[in-house]
Length: 77
Image 1 (tube, rainbow, N blue to C red):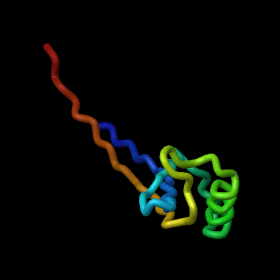
Image 2 (image 1 turned 90 degrees about the vertical axis):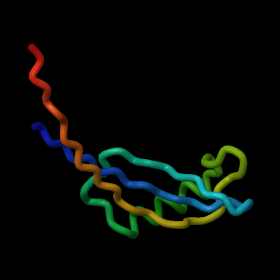
Image 3 (image 1 turned 135 degrees about the horizontal axis):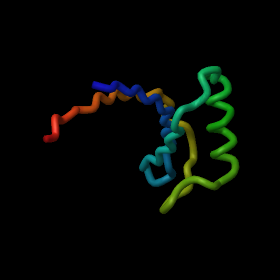
C-alpha cells in the first residue's frame, strides 16, 4: 500500500460578527517561523481581502494539519 503524508497550514481569523474564516495553505514552506506566520496573518487582515460576509478582524490561531493517507489496493481480475 502506498502511503502519502500531506501537511497543510491552516490560518484561522475572527470576524467582527463573532464568526471565523479559515485559510488553508497546502504544502507550506518548512522554514516558516511563528513570527513569519503571524506577520503574514497581520498582512492579510490589513489587506481587507479575506472574509465573505464579514471582513476578518484579528488572528484566532494557526496550526499545521498533517494527514496520513494510505491507499487500498484491489486485486482486480
